[in-house]
Length: 498
Image (cartoon, rainbow, N blue to C red; front, side, top):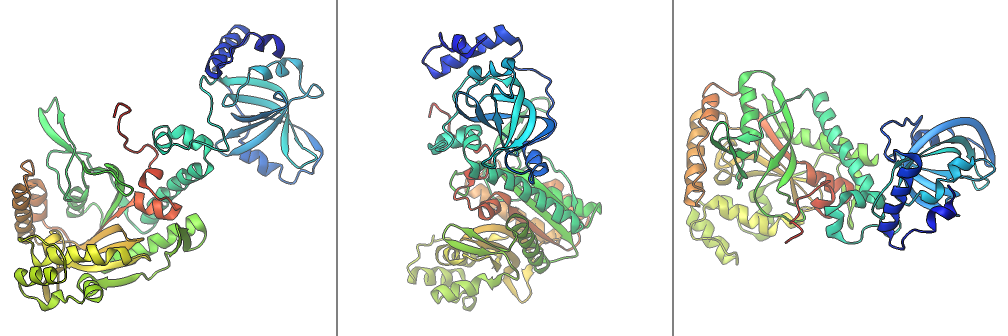
């Protein structure tokens, strides 16, 4: 079988050419997708082992590698194949490669996956190469591969066909490798800090732990409507009640049936933890130590670029109470007010459009979002949130309108939310009933009181600090990604029909 006779009858259509080559290969060699092929090392291992090999030197070492063909030159005499670890050049010439192996070259297209056995050499130009002795077709591809140097330019195709994006975009490939490293780094950090990882249910008969619209499903056997988890909080707190551990965490997938944006995906990853006999200030320290360790792991330094900014994860972070931040930005002193009416009047006088039934705390939080959030570029802990919007946190001593809660901001994004957790069972029930009434007033008729959680709290939960971190947004920062869809391997997309 020669290259000339193989290609003489092939179509000019790229996809059809591949189909015809597949047919010829099946006739010639039989199995074009063999189940058994064992390489002796990865491309990166090969590069490391022979990094000191001098130019224009060939060893007698025989190795077997495998990978996808990314480039082919001189009718296949030179090919670059890539595996997940890197690339290696393949050299096939009549002086070193048997005719049987060279006869395969005309049947190999860019994107095919091949195995190669041969000796290691470094060319005069310094390129580490393998002199091919055997070439094995491992996977014949039926679709052309996007041109490597330009990649997939259509953003929607990049997200929908992530495999093509990663094949042709080294930045995307690196970002997802870094994502894996960050998630692993969070897990190692928490375990080294004495936290125990557990798994909580994704299917809830009563949804709670956050304010969000859930995804609804139905369990046929139990004949029960259920909801995909919007937060693991209430189950993790039950674990504290049980005494299984004083420090518990979960890296979890949550589902919220809400909008899609550059910072929101309906399915997202959080790390949530609870620490008995700690408070929100202990959690602030934990966040700073975690963020610093992740930056060092990914960048080797606590400073790294994001867009036009240089972000520093070196602790301690700035800490500012929300009323103070609003006063500094607008001159409005919420702590000097005593009624909801005063707060609404002050907000309106300053030009803010607030609703007629908003409380003191809702006005404060709204103005914070409008005037302060966008200024929080370097990591900052905003503390002392209004109790009106924080049903699971303990009051600030001496100021019952505020609670011991903080959110960590960076690049004007919320990255984490933490409390000194409420563990007074009577107060917990009162606040959850009030929250339920508000939800029903908004039309959320399916919202229910979680009596099982309240029963557990009646049993007694130790004082604790709790934390939830948006892992996807944290990864965006650490990998300089402008959209959450750039760090989620398979983000939610509309169907092609839409």
